[in-house]
Every structure is written in C-alpha cells, then in structure tokens.
Image 1 (cartoon, rainbow, N blue to C red):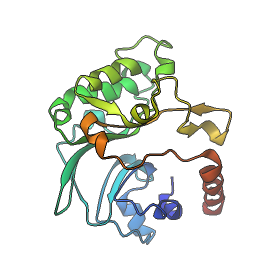
Image 2 (image 1 turned 180 degrees about the horizontal axis):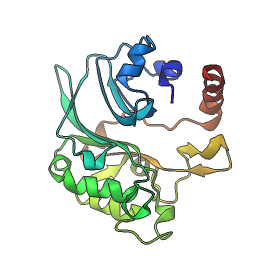
Image 3 (image 1 turned 60 degrees about the vertical axis):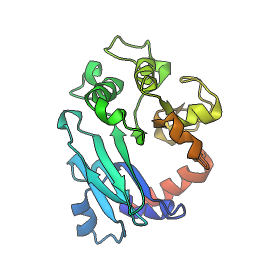
Length: 226
C-alpha cells in the first residue's frame, strides 16, 4: 500500500507499464498531491487505498475494455502508442467470500475462459499476482488447480515467461516472488507473466528482484510512511 511513498523504487527502471497490487486510487493520489507523471491510470477496488492499479508512461496509453466485474481484480486492457498496441489482463486474485472453491486460481481460470476471445489474440500479455502455485494443486479439492490453469493457457500457446526462460517446471521454481511477512525463509512463487510464446522471442531481459535488494528499502519506506 501507499505506493505514492514508494514510487522511487520503480523510477530506476523507467517503466512503460506498471501493474500494482494494493495500490491507492487516482483520487487518493490526487488528494495526497502525489506527483506521478503517468500517461494513463486504470484502477479498480472496493477500498480506495487498496485496489489494483495499472499505469503507463513514456507515451503509452491504456484503455479499459469490457470489464466483467464478476472477476473484479482482473482487468482487460488495451495498451498502445503511436507505433504499436497489445492487450493485457492485469491480475490480482483474491479470496472471495471466504470460499476457496471460487477464489485465487479458480477465479483466474474462470476469467480466462470468459475472456477467451482476448486470449486468442497474437499480442496478449497476462501479468500480476495470481496467489497461486502448483505446490498447492492437491491441498483442497476445487474446480481448477494451478496446473490445470497453466494447461488451459498453454492450449492458446500462452506460456509463463519465467518458466520458459529458466527451464523450470511449475511448482519447482528456484526463485521466489514472495517473501511472506518479509521472511526470507517463507518463500513462494505466486506472481507470473504469461504471453503468447512467439512474443517471448522479443524479450531482451527478464529478472525477479532479490530479497536483499528490495525488502529493506520497502521496510524503510514502510516505517517512514507510518
């Protein structure tokens, strides 16, 4: 939360597109007089301080497509500038009504089935916090598990960038994306970028930040803002 106090962490990357979970609304950013020079900002949430936000910079613009609010924090977006365009599903899956059967990976997979026409496009990227992993495939019976979700995406030639480039299987990731409660011993890989496989040929670099590079900066900002 409180992205306005942490934005300098991202400035070093000069990003074109940023997908943020637990991001404050544009209203809050404006009320706090936060100077974030984005081109476009799309936000959805029930709590104005904690939703999903997508921001564009460097001439890129965002257009929210037909958003099915049944899948609240899964946003279909067109990204474009004067020279190119692509489509995105920005993801933040959550626990719905305290029912695991309709939450997290089930929510995402149902959304992918709903947005199947979007997934057929040659220039589709799916990115965000899935709160899902193959290590939990058999923990509780539900409509879809993580591996089934991945298979459904693979049927559309949509693959995980991390797993393709690192030659690792889902559930066997060596690099975590979450240090739960900032604990280096509580690690999970639950965040993903999926895209059409032929799009991956244009990737110039890909990396996941290391614990020691980011967690202490985050803590410093956290304490300062509270």
